[in-house]
Length: 103
Image 1: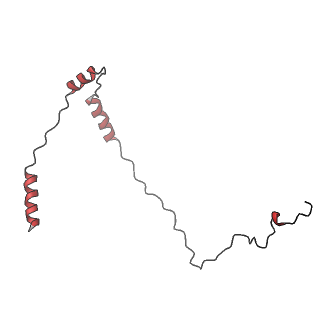
Image 2: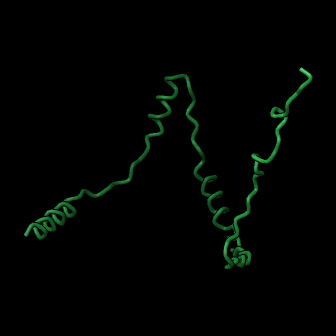
Image 3: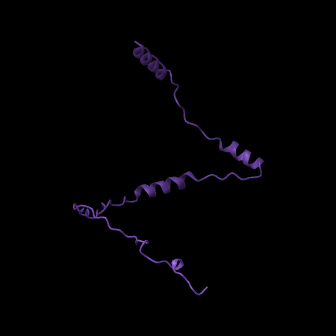
């Protein structure tokens, strides 16, 4: 029962939305603010911007070259082998373990 009521509220809110109007930037006011601060207002030339945008749009798009994937390595399915990489220090005589009879 709550869902239809919410749908009606949403529909009523969307119907009551105001229309959006274009915003006009007051360049004269902005230039006056900049001049009052000791700055100069610099604005881009609309014709130059349009020419550059047209030149960018006229450039051909680069051709998509798909990536060459390397071949998948073959995994070895044999059982794993444990390889011991450390020396057994119990059997090794270290320099500080030798008996120096000279001292």
